[in-house]
Length: 112
Image 1: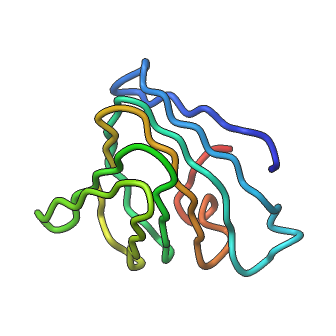
Image 2: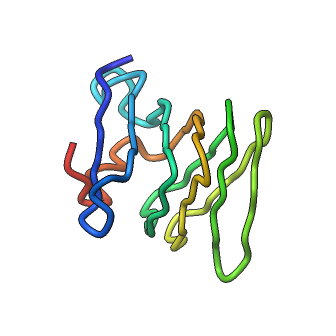
């Protein structure tokens, strides 16, 4: 896994969010994959890419178009491009993600 990033959100500086990509964009120019961890946090995000999330451990909650979804270990979710989502973790959660295209961070103006 290529490093882990911890992103502290301006609204909630104590939030714990970690991202560890498995392959670099050079190694996999079409799809990105990695693990994300969250702990007692919630944030809004607009996906400019397609994403599949597989919950490894804990509970992941997200809200899309007013509908709340909850996933536990073994659950898989597909989030279409251009969806506005609120990701939440009431406790600790770890999930595996796959995105298409691979440059999700660039598309979302995410600072690595």
